[in-house]
Length: 216
Image (tube, rainbow, N blue to C red; front, side, top):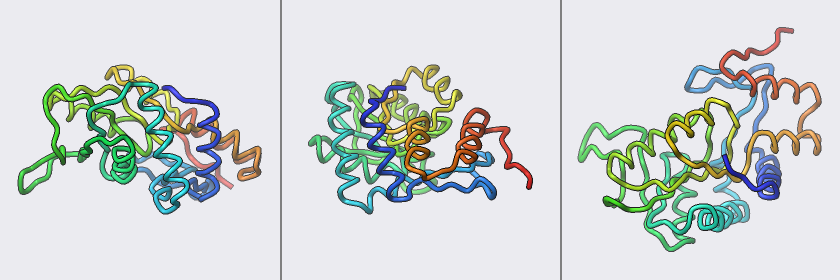
């Protein structure tokens, strides 16, 4: 996982400012995986704030070229990264496509929407990485189409060990604007969370699958 410290600090501050990060340790959120989580990150909210979405767009555009070189196409992961992916593609003057979680059940039964071709160099854009499974399913769909995935960029990464393992196994480099550890540092420094909440959030991150809220 690759990130820039200054960018991670700025991104964390912005996500906290617009309440894209929600905390509820006593009544945790339920993820699609079945995990209980005391934190929920909704990066789609960034699209409603022009200055913040512009910052994210420009940071992605700059760092895509710095980390991976200019690709032939930007590909978003549906649905959360479609909006920001389009903005990044427009900023770089590149084509855009997106990948569904699975092929449609009707019509042309596409999983990849948009025009891609064999040998094309792609950067995949995500809004959020947790375990990495859904993100890497998009990479696999592109590879089956014989598209060369040069890497992936994401707004935020929870920093789970399982994600690091999954990305390494699939040989995909991930660059993120923000990450969990930096977010917690900012949240405690600016009093978004208490010290007891910090401990809860650290304990959850260390064992998200087995974590459960403390009983009163």
